[in-house]
Length: 227
Image (cartoon, rainbow, N blue to C red):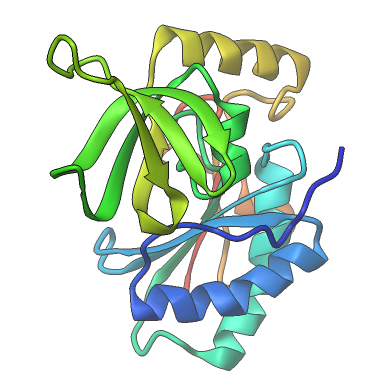
């Protein structure tokens, strides 16, 4: 399939997140991945979350490890964060962020939550079914509009602040079919991998203990390390 790794992302990011995205995206692209999102959170003190995907919108444990291994030394050299932080490289997950036009096109007929950076027709938040992608707009059908009011809203992608899929039975069924056809890992119990700071550590030890890792959905994959 044709897959533009650098297709424009429409998402609101802080100045630091934008800087980190500029550092991370070329590394991801060189590995054949597309950057989905960079996000800083206060989890575990400070966590840098990097979401990425391959050309089919998937990202398994092996992919997480590859990107984490290549991006870590680049972040160490560029040093965009001035204090200790945890690096988490993960898949977009089932109820994934929608950051590109192709994301909306891939999930036409599914429910999404969209927040705009500015008001549009008196509202900033929209929740409804993705009806279509029309150039640089996405059409969302809202279920909660007054009777006799047009339910379809054309939202400019350029105004997108944040958007993600809503977890529904339909979305879960789609994910289950994809999981059966393309299993994430031979061992379904391995969902999160803690990477050691010791570069000389036995790779087998990096994935040996998962007892204290947070429970995730089967569709999510991630790796974590501390910087």
